[in-house]
Length: 462
Image (cartoon, rainbow, N blue to C red):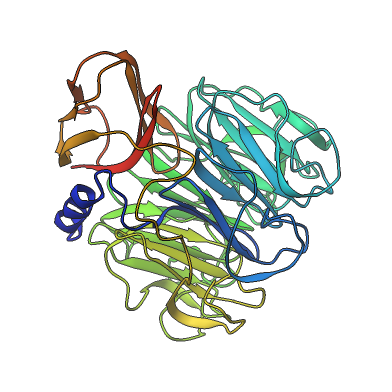
């Protein structure tokens, strides 16, 4: 297992449930801005704000994180080029920022510098943002899309824009989604990948370069567990820890040692034991290895590969000075990594302050985001903390919840993408054992709720 597991277990014990440090737990990178959720469920953002994509009621850029207005009880965030999203724990989606093609999904084309609810969406488990389109995965396995549709990236059989969510054609049993520049991806529960939208560089992976406004299956790709999309390329992670990429390769973003584009998936042979892949950036990609190191490849003109140079690479190179990483994200020209203790590191372009370290200076090595989350000696003002203990942590197959609380309570468990994987309601026991043997290894977020309040935290399943 990763070297950080034991320390994280200790951190979780300390954290149980008298918060002494509030740190980041979920991250996302947009074109020129960044977003994170703190452990107290507050959303923070920084960087470019010309269209209100920071969501703090202004259009002023920020070189340090600022709090998004009117948001609480959120479990994951996502970012498009100039717009942002948050998924609430009640399954509703809220969006803010640029809206010239209806990418906020509220029935208008007026941008908003504060969060507004996406029309008629409930029961959502995952959200993703492309250049000017948006995707949401419902807990029934269907996908809904809205925004720009010039290349069929909404997947509904036409090329007409929509400012409200519409159903993607013919897809069911979907467990993950991803959005590229003007193309979209979906992972089915049988391990196959489906794509639609722009295909000028072969980013749909179907053996040709013809756009499609309906989902088509990626050629010869099975056993996939994760997907991401870049501007003109796509990346997939297989169950065996190998990584596959296709599409544009001008800057080596396919990671196979060449600059030859491919309209079918190619394996990145120098990568193995990978546990996560990032939202592929403009022309670069990231991968997280099982030893908690981060590897990057592709374009590097602003230092977005984080290896101390500004030279592009056609094969993966290790991001320097990083260890204990649990999550990664890639924007158009910058990258992000979250350490197990909640510290957030960024690198790459910083023209709008998207690195969040109090300057506009680019960095080709990771730097720490400043003033990421507020410090607290008590509990979040939105939710009263409850006295629940979860053990053991890390978990192997089973875990226990113990409490002195008397009354009904519930437990929800979410994977790192925000997808709900467990929902136990109306529990009336002071100690309860839960079976998670069917879940994959990794980091999960939980929320325990009762009438008196809620309690949030993280667990690791080995």
